[in-house]
Length: 253
Image 1 (cartoon, helix red, strand yellow):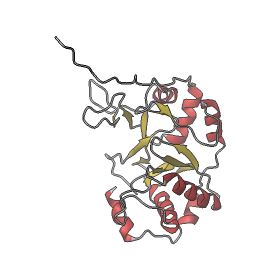
Image 2 (cartoon, one colour):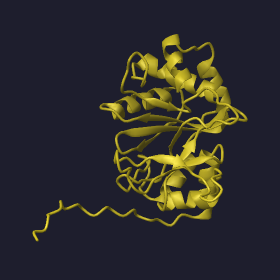
Image 3 (cartoon, one colour):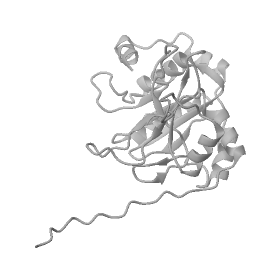
């Protein structure tokens, strides 16, 4: 009987597992974890789309949502698993950070434009490359109102003609996390891949641009980054409003 030839497939790359310390996990939690709910990226592609989706992390037996803890963070930093982080804490409607996600042609140029403009305000934004583009992160001194964070970034983007996804019939453009001004007590909003983790689709780890590519130096770099203060944010957004055409999209996020 003749054998049917099968197409050769390259072996799937293995993730580089790095040692991550308890101290590194603790600092990461202090900077990026604003609530304990989280998502996790699948280790295998969806059989229909081929995508590596993020799903709600739940207890297999009880189906209850799992809570982030230092052990999970260590596994994320090590590369054993990849998590997604929610921006808004529903008890305060505040976020510890702002992330600008851009994954379209010309995205890196637009993020560098935003970064330069932020620096003119004295705001230090850090660039993290991603599989299809890049992320721009702003860390806050303390959790700040999601509504004001979004108002600030959207106002800058509009002034600089940086495209905003979903507005003005714009298919491609930046997405701002937090994605909502506020959420209900039982809601979660939208999660974004936690920085310094490995993207399971290509098993590649994306580092922040301005520090050497190792965990110790990356953590030290993040430790040194200037944080956005409440007083600064209030100054930047005083008297600023977002056009109704953008607000309509914001409400649907």
